Length: 172
Image (cartoon, rainbow, N blue to C red; front, side, top):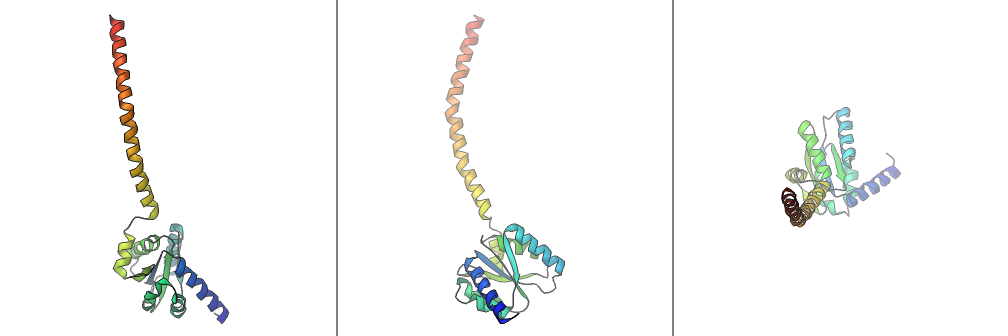
């Protein structure tokens, strides 16, 4: 990489650290190219991104961001996974690490909070933003349907009573 390319990469990575909801750092030594491509495609499908960066450049890019506390994680062969949704990147990384023991989660950051590996795993168990929205809509929708059935119940009971009287008059 030339000096200009490095500057551009550091600037781009700095913007990523500022804009991301969460960032996960992991060791990937021993992961094959096919496995890495599979991992990248899973992350892309979920709405996140995986980058492999030189540790020195990543540390420079972290300066001046909220995630600056995780600079000590960049040792050895590391990759960075990030997403706008705070749950997406940890969830995909932890799921991939379950099936591939070569990928080792080192930690990460969510805003100003630096996460250890257990913190990343607990963040991965949370429901995503879309799942939370669906649950909230379900909770809001349930009382409305109950109100509609309660309001409609007296009218249907009256209709049954009138029907019964009509049948009684016809029989008589």
